[in-house]
Length: 302
Image (tube, rainbow, N blue to C red; front, side, top):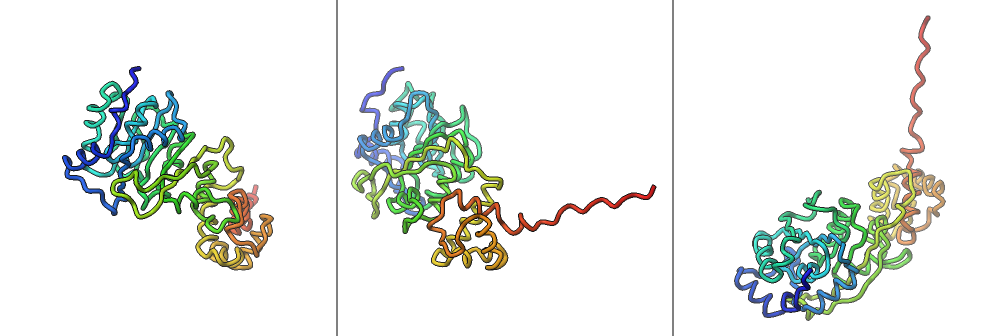
């Protein structure tokens, strides 16, 4: 395989020239901030531990800065782009700047939240500069839809990065923390300055590393049942779980009974619980504990 030269990556002048030629102006509506620094995209690829055998899926490739850096290393890259103009232009950019790797690139022109299948081999890694306004839903959707993804590295707003990587007991621990923890071991993996973007965002950015759990959360209930408890617990995060889960359980007394059965204090708050504890509460749901037994068949007359 021929190694691409550093000239293949996009610099600030290249980005602006491409954008001008396409008539593209980044929009806040889609959370578009294009990375214009080649060193930054190479750093992202290194931090993501992208390997020569990896099949990488990228969400929101924009003009292709990170896409090109991924193609330098990965076996294949599939990019998911919602924007009509950007999606139409990206294959030509890849072909022009990395002609020897163009055959290992695929484009999916769709909203990532609605993507349920990808062309080619199953993805092994997710690496993306996620649009900030939909970062968490997209990340969770991709992890849920493509269980073959073993590792992920996403760039998100610093505040969101803190929430995703928060541990129980932290003030910013919440729904994103628990739901990401259902799928993976999550940690902060660095910070990204504002000056490497065009246009420069008004917020700082952070990298989040996710390594899929080798053993899923041990539970007898479904992910949706666990997530229903999580959503209820944090909808009123200042309240004790006895009060916050009253609607979910049917009453505060029923919530207390479920919590006690799960070995969780009714006076605790959601921000102190691990994903495993949320799963135990879901297992102790009143609907699961009080379901009537199947009626016995009446004896037949002989």
